[in-house]
Every structure is written in C-alpha cells, then in structure tokens.
Image 1 (tube, rainbow, N blue to C red):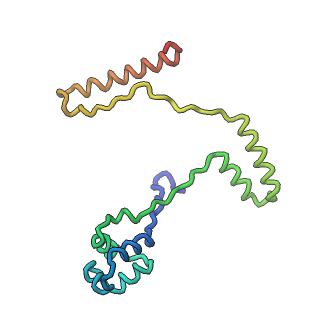
Image 2 (spheres, helix red, strand yellow):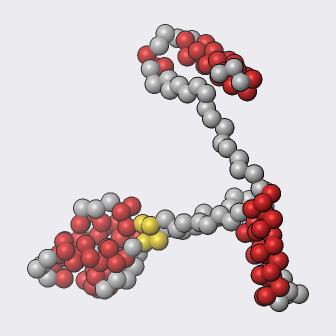
Length: 168
C-alpha cells in the first residue's frame, strides 16, 4: 500500500505474444523468414523467436508492428484489479488469523455475512437533476458561458430542494 506522499503503482499491462506471433506468421505468408526479417528491419533470430511466441525487445516490437501494419496497443491486455468490499476484507483477516482454525474462521464469517445481509441498507446513487453539455460554448459571445454556468448550478440546487421536499 502506498503512503500518502507516494503514488500507488499501476498494474502492468500484458503483451499478447501469441497474437503477435500469429499475425507475424500470417503477414509473412510464403516469404522466407530471412527475407521477412530484412523487410521488418529486425534480425532473423528475433523474428524466429517472435514467431515461436517469445517477447521481443521494445525496438524490435515497434518495428514488427510497423511491418505488419498494426498499432502496438492492439497487443496489450490490461490487468484487471479486484476491489474487495469491506465485508470481504474483514473475512480475509479472519481467514489469516493464526489463532483461528479454518472451521472457526468459516463459522465467524458465516455469522458476519448473515448480520451484514440483515443490517446493511441499499444505498441509491444520487440522481442528477440537471445535465447540460456546453458544446457550443466556444461559439457563444464572450462571457455567456461564465454567466450560464452559475445559473445552471442554481437551477440544479433549486430542483434538488423541490425533489427533497416532495414537490416534484
């Protein structure tokens, strides 16, 4: 976990070398490996390794992408992060407690889940009462967008009060 002054590390994206290898083989077709490597601007051994599914260095990767006519971003797959709920975090602490046997941790977790299901309230996200996109703002007369913004905020606040009072 990052301290307040540090930035949390973002998970790396994965390079799909299998897809790269397939596209290299397709693009090469009946052309010899040596000729294709020369056309791509990489060594014979590099192209051979890429076709076998190895990860190339950055310079070779970009040269191969240019040769096959595909943007490098096509081969990157973002790593998904799992966000645990507070309930899952509490239960994971129980499961790692060395003083509890696995059966005891499971029993406590079952009770906590049951209590959570009974006591937790469903929270509705706030609804936007006014939404406006000022796409034409650059074509308006000077000062109009600056005056229109506060008016829209005031309208939004007024509508919110009416909704909360049950008048709308």
